[in-house]
Image (tube, rainbow, N blue to C red; front, side, top):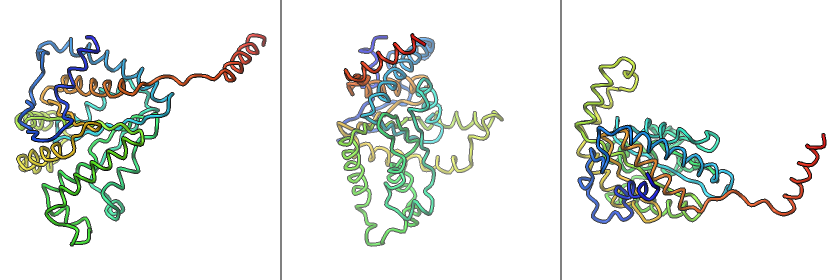
Length: 296
């Protein structure tokens, strides 16, 4: 697969202007021109992608100018963890950090909603991954108003406008990150309700997958429609040119991984990455060191 071909893959699912976006524009079972029986071609393409990403990440790290933040959001069993694991498998662990955002702690709740995310931003030269993120503040918190009530905000600040305010704050935050050399790419792994059920049953029926299952997962499933509405609103209001969402079909894991890898490569390739140029003075010192070693 040529890079050109590769690029088009993720562009199908890239939303950089959320106006009028509808979740049903994207089919969770889509695999574009890949036939589901042709997993071998997909595996080869992913392996090539992983290798390309390793090269780019090495330059990112050496250059030490840009940071990349990859945000993953999804319903349970959409394959977030597996996608992160497979797509980042070739990247040097030193150049990559994963932060998983569970329910906020008491300390987190004593701060503004972006505070805990801010602690985890990747350093220059690194790829940071948010497994869930500050977007939960417009998702689970929106679907379950009782969570908002526990956030100890001054009551007069919690009105009907809170969601549009949070979306605006997030847009400004991501603008700010972009202007400081943090490249943000956001992924919603879009799984169908039917496929989630199949994966839940598999988790219950295979002992080695039991650990992945909790009764809470089933409870959240009953809020499916509210979550889809919250996701649609989130993408509508926070997909921008410099900080796009990728709504990635997630019913076929091998395809999900391909699209995510392609989007990450696309982002890295846009950065004009290069190894730092060694100055003339440093070059002379290197030549001297080389000579000394040879003379030992």
